[in-house]
Amino acid sequence: MIHIAIFASGTGSNARKIINYFAAHPQIQVTLILTNNPSALVTEVATQAGIPVSVFTREEFYQSGKVLETLQQHHIQWVILAGFLWLVPHNLIQQYANRIINIHPALLPKFGGKGMYGMRVHQAVVENKETHTGITIHLVNEKYDEGEVLFQATCAVEPGDTAEEVAHKVQILEHMHFAEVIEKVILKNVY
Image (tube, one colour):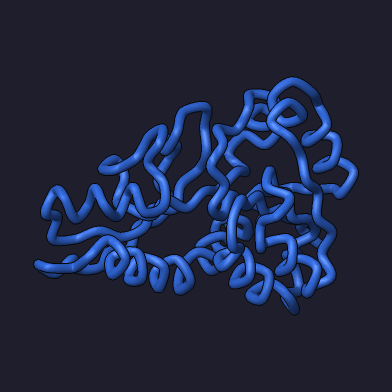
């Protein structure tokens, strides 16, 4: 069994889709949820699914080996970032080289980088009068949103669309593709 961990900071809508997708999977299992936000709704998602949750502080993430130790205790082989906003530290990048996957709510390299997350991205897309946006699923390196692109999907941005409407379209793409791309990438790298 291949054990994956999901890092999330918010509601956990992508985490829920990933958990459900792999619930009966013969080879891949979501084994652990990690969050930097003790009141994040993702903790409820994990509890409902019977998956342990590990909450950590900024200091524990950047100044100690606690998070890496937790991953190793749960035999985690792949790390998934699903709405996790902090830059991943060197020790995790090194330990999980080319095995950390993130989803970004825009078509990188556009609208990526530090501070570009959530509604900020969609607002920028609208303000720049983009005709298309979408999702980028990519490997994680030591810079925000600069790892190798694994997959992109697009949707139209209509004149007059609000940032909220764009967010809704993008979330549909996230839920449609993220778990499936994770599965393909992991299985391709195992066999």
